[in-house]
Length: 292
Image (cartoon, rainbow, N blue to C red; front, side, top):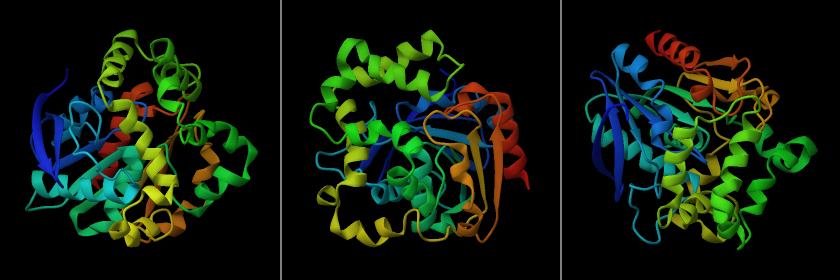
């Protein structure tokens, strides 16, 4: 595994993290169905560029332990990220790279504590009402997003674990067509999802996002801003041209929500996991953007 292992307490959660390099903090946030080692292929380049790269296992993803009853809605994830930055870099703002659910957490953190984030890089999840609208109005995106609605059902836990986690492996294949997750990486990912409570936590992200009854009232103000309110942080968005999970054209119109500037980088011949599929290109794009 690239980097050293450490644990950071933030916002009431003990976050397990992989760390590499020295310098200003660059926090890397993974998504679903994934875990922190997903960044191993880009961490050396980012560290060599002069950053202290820290990739936490997100809340509920072993070995990060979350207290029983922890909220998993996007607002809570954003406060987790802000607290991680405060714990890791109390004296200066950080750069943040979020992929998939990590991108949503990064958006929420930028809304909650923009002064804590110097530059934002997000991948594979667009921002803005056009994205939320597409989930219920565009048949092509509804088909891509079937898993979101399936995850609301009580049978989802059993389906995720069945046949040696075949559902998860199929998502990787469908979302990144033409590319295959290396077998060693799949075995490590499978081990993460086999840990007690990880499947339930992963599903809780989707259930808390779309079921108001599961959301905490004290987080309502921030929750209502996510995907709607402008983000006051310079931002780079990366997206695979062949993303089988979220259509690349949903990036259209994002610029209006980023008053301090939005850059787009479409990764050709890549799907939903461009940092894993095209690590050299993604790392170079990130380093160029952060150096400006």
